[in-house]
Image (cartoon, rainbow, N blue to C red; front, side, top):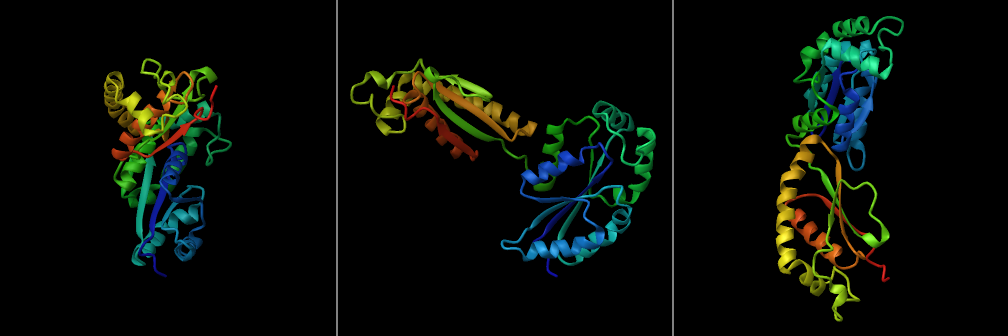
Length: 289
């Protein structure tokens, strides 16, 4: 079995410490995620992934304290995988007992290791079961003071070495037809020169060079675009740090055909040049009335 390209991440920790959130963060990074795979099947599963077309190279496996056989054999399994050439990481999520108890009270769930007893009893039992796994971990995270966004960012930064950048969705639109739903930021372009009143530009769209130049290269257009770029240079990294997957920016004008389209395209080009992943939708560009 050759796993020289496999990257395996075992996610272990106390119930309620954020394993589900951690697995979701890894899934967003392209990891194939699976919960509670029996220990005796792990090596076979990794081998099957390596034989897939294309090979599945990034795998995350959640470790549950209820699977005692897996816990006991995890050091041996991890060692075998490393000896076969795979890159293996064990992430252990810890959390203060009182915070775990509070989380269980808020969600009204019973602890999996103490279904008929108290949460504190379940936490204590789980800590004992996970002593060996905790010692095996090469990365430990205390989630006591973390929210879900901070935990996702910590997981991604630890595994990939970088913060996952927020994807920007740009939507141009016409206020005449209503504002888009679910936008985080919205900008009104109706103060810019309007190509609609220029006979040679009226029937064309903001995606065409002459119309775009009329809007973006005007004195107001250039100044506004510069200020908007500066604002986004400040705010987008904050979204990155919060672990926000997407942010939608609405750019509107009267009809959604000229000014909003031109400014959205100019902004998209700048964000792409900065290495930001973006998508652009011109909702009302085909409307003529």
